[in-house]
Length: 128
Image (cartoon, rainbow, N blue to C red; front, side, top):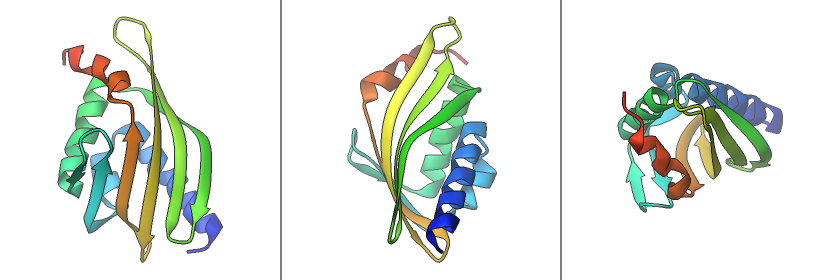
């Protein structure tokens, strides 16, 4: 994939995550991809990650991934973004994140995500 292909792939991936479409998100991952988070130092499987995506979609059904910076790498991309939404109580929600994505043969093989769990903690209190 050339740099433009990776950029377009990343845009489509972000759009799928915004929609919370687990079936579509699965198509971006290699079957044995690993998703790691800095806050728990745990490597999720694709299935575990899609459960997290479904949980996030239940908590924030309408959200936007605002891309701050994206750098195309030789094997994927690095991205800084802010997830923005409105909480059920009307308050704004913002969570900054950075991810480093590795790809092979047009699929994500590894995604390392860095975020502050304190920003996500408010989501635990949302009932649904």
